[in-house]
Length: 492
Image (tube, rainbow, N blue to C red; front, side):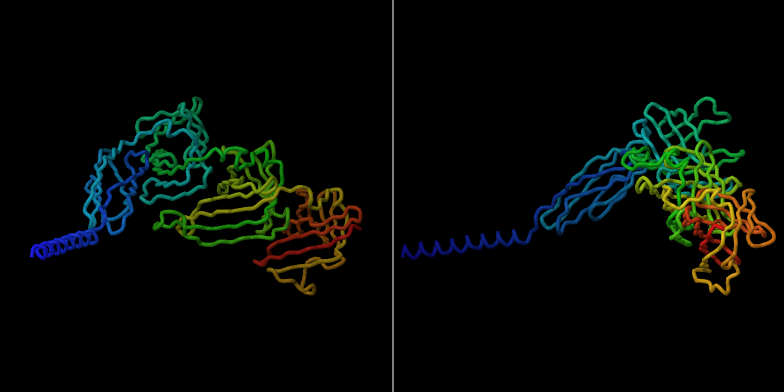
């Protein structure tokens, strides 16, 4: 009996123990891991108001995240972003909840008042965007510029150098800081200039937002500007070498390809994003569209024959810092054109960006020209004025109208055996009793003016001085049609 009693007691204890173990395992499986409440954050504007704070927390499965940012705003989810617009101390609390329980973490974020320092300003800043509100208008004119176009160079010693097309004339001077206001005073000797107060609404290591009230003719123009930090490579012959004025001037640069893109301002995107048109011109004869920056002066000769009656234009060219940018103003009072040497492909090839702003049909328009140029190296055929003077017989001719070959029988331009005479006095006999004129622009371009006054730029594409054989190319527009002609000539 005793043995049976002991056996029964042991069986009961075993069953109870197994039940306890089973219940314990069941509870462990039903509850998840204990959540973790932990986060880090980064802040813009050097954690001064306004500052945008980005939070990052532990990523866990089946865990809910509830945030309280201490400014009355809350958020449900992972990795929130919040902007504090005023200075103060904000206690951020994260609550992580799951089946395994709840965990919390809190941390104070101290948002300071926006204070500009010389250390923050130190460096070169590009004005990449402007909102210009004219007097009496509530609609700003938006202007965007590439890096390096308009610059402010601040030193930590309180000296600045301004290069600007639209705000103020090129000048330098000193500056002082009063919390969020920079007052710039030009170097003594600048007449009729009032110190400029610039209100900084945002600044960090890479970007400045500023507002300026400029007085012009007794009226106030309000400007909002965005500035981006430039690296040192934008200024010299360093990582991205740039042409200086001496590199650019005195050389002939032929245009190989040119893309014209016209943008209109989009209020939805608050920038010039709507493309009205894009046109790319390629296969331009070498040396046919050419820049001639003239050394020792502020003049540049531009030869172009893509539009009727346009074969040469003189521009004034002003060197500005950095040395890869030039301000070009058409001498005839036309629009300002800003040329930026954007990229050096090698010693003989560069790319440029030119931008002009205007208005078409009541819309704000930006026209951007992207151009590939090659430095003329003398490999093209050349001819001198002495070699050109005399009579030339046309021995072969091809003509194209709007990209289609013209039947020789339908051509009214010089037939075979037509003689061109170039005289030392600048006159030209074109097979017509009334003489025309001509002049040599350079060793491979000359202009022929017909008796009617029509002008055609002729480009020398082949010349053999020993055999006195000449191949020339011309292009012009007549009644809206584009004509191209190649002539083979022999000296008589």
